[in-house]
Image 1 (cartoon, rainbow, N blue to C red):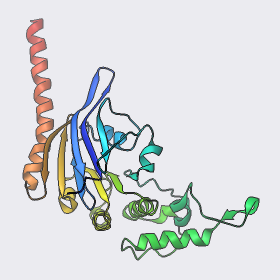
Image 2 (image 1 turned 90 degrees about the vertical axis):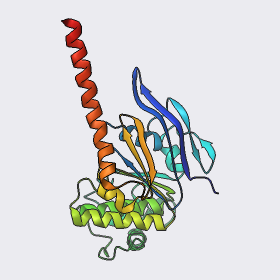
Image 3 (image 1 turned 135 degrees about the horizontal axis):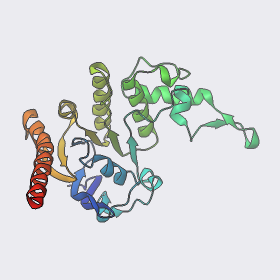
Image 4 (image 1 turned 45 degrees about the vertical axis):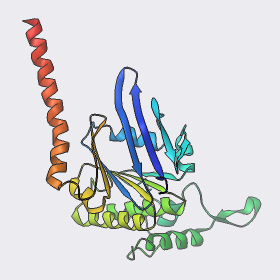
Length: 266
């Protein structure tokens, strides 16, 4: 059996005396969607930053294709084919679709000091890349990104990441701020990315959206993996109860600590 594209082995992360992640081990394979579920404060953001090279783990290892890797910066992670798309897509509302697609890596024409941005080529590539994901209603690369829906902006960012060589696509709450129709649009794009052989890490707190695309699920509670299971192993209600259990446990522990403090004072 081939190695997972990405594997986390016993990852821990502390900031001074504060332990944020505890013994995180996860894998994601080509053509698989790993859904990372958890409420606010579960540790999802810290884990994303480790995967994208913003934070270095305190201990533990990361492997790609079975070989150890070390990300000292976001450039290291992107160089390995890891692309992170955040909630609002990382696109630029006042830029055209073609310009936003290539920002920082613009195609040019001409020679030497006479090189200029090749607007026609940028627009053609951007529109073709978007259409490769089945989005046909966007056909003008000169259109401003700000005129796109939230779902379309997410699609543009995902198409851009794939064009520039992403092998692992990390999607940070891509449907959180979207309506039902726009969220469905993004979920279709996620399935398209899976069909293209990408490994997708889909971070969300919305169980219904996770179940629509996920193959592999992990529930993160207070920095630890509370459950790790495959599609079909648990119902939506069971997953929701798992996530709620983390909040309930935190509240219970706070009550116990408060009661213990008052008893000591008394």
